[in-house]
Length: 511
Image: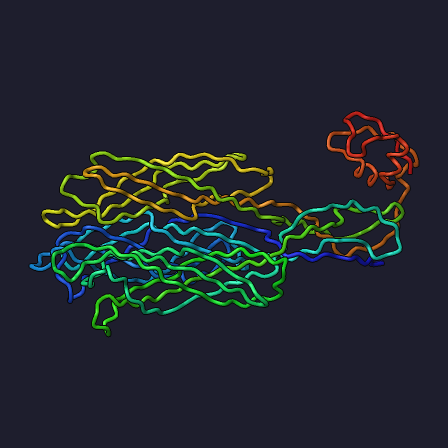
């Protein structure tokens, strides 16, 4: 006869995969007829974006665009340095062991290496190593038994645990075309050389059935001005964005985990405006919103009947009960002597942290590797541009607390900032890193279904037994084996602490 139960329903992450997958992507770029021939390549900056993801069995298909900013030398009476911006689509298949079609993916691409050459004056060959920082998750619905809704007496082992119960998981796209004018100190543009973006000042505010997202896109622009003296300029602009996303069942207990991923960004001069300070920005940001509630749940971990044989189906599920995030700020400073010549002026710099490798041993997190810094320099005499790379050694250790052996630990550099001061031939480099350590508490749950009451065969059960405690035994397991109760064993043997028994201890068991 079926036995009814009262259940608590939860939505949890039961699989989490964090993996970096590297791919080399090659592209031939043709110098357009409107630009002069290229004599020498000075610098190539590669900015990859992912805007479409398809998760398959053990694979992920990603597609998007790559923006190429190229600075090159020409033979020209007006400008000897020129810039070329071009964008190209790509599609790649990533091998990710354990990926399944019903998983949700967040993928952030970064460029780790760039190799470029000039086969002829109209063709530029670029080979770039793109690291796809891949995060996969799968949400499962589980039902934990709170109590039995039946007349039969059933022995229950209760458990109380904290859960992050996922109420809603939603992706949304913030897309916009914005027109803006650069600040007064910016000079009129002749040509863009490079554009870098970063999402900053992220915040949200929840209300009834909606959440308002706000933030800024920090834009850094390197360009040639129209004054025809070949001076390279740099200007920054902060572009605000906002969006309203509809969510269900927001209440005072709702909490949010929100991540942002730039899927596309293109900046152009507005040709319809007479001033060359008016820009058009076309961008697309993917927002991943997880709304959850922290709940303490008491449920039945194990059960049996002293008088009946209970039959049921069991499914074992590994699930993440709680996720904790810790951010650690790491600072490093290095003064590099005689790294550039006297006639060189530092124009711009860019930080690459992909060569810093995090590792975890127990509670200790270690960051080790090199922070790669790309420099853009200009000769103050000849006005020729030059690129140069330097490496800053990073070796930092810190400890995280409250980590159990079964936990999954993921470490990622989620933000970085760099400032460089030139003093003659010396550079003073300061780097700030924000390191996120995400700890997932993983537990195995026995999901019990289709419980039925049957007849208990007691032919092999003696009324009185002397049991010798073995390694790993508990009073619960002993009572379940002999179809008695823990309370009865405790009273019969005058046990002071039911949670403490010793290997070799003799216990009298009476049914």
